[in-house]
Image 1 (cartoon, rainbow, N blue to C red):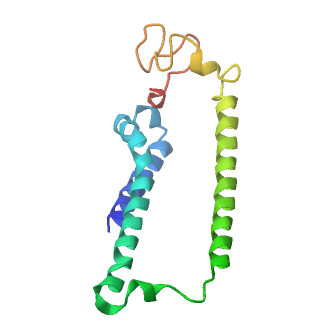
Image 2 (image 1 turned 45 degrees about the vertical axis):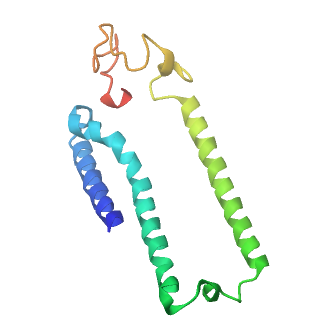
Image 3 (image 1 turned 60 degrees about the vertical axis):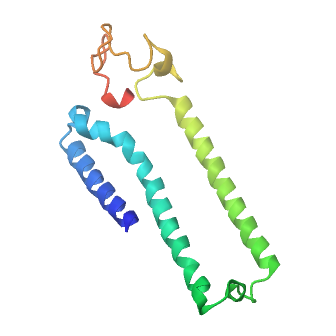
Length: 152
């Protein structure tokens, strides 16, 4: 149930974000921007809640006298089948991890739109999130647009 509750919260949060984005007020949506970084952990929490529900619900019917655990395994699944399945999962997840790493590095080196070069925004000025010349968050850099709150 927790998985479904969190999914509903994330759906409402996504709809709220779409509404704010549609109205072109994302930079000024203080509460949305404060909550957005915390929404990142929701998929992990949903996955863990679903996993716990599955794992906690799987074993009791075997243990509570209906069937012994030794009888719960399938005799038609050979050791070779298990190794093939494990190897396939390792290969698929290794490829996905490599693709993820490649894309993260590619876009990190590319930088944000409007920057002069790779990584130019990360070290420019008085430091990441320092704001404008006064150092106040959200103030515009000389000749630039206001810095959105997400960079802090």
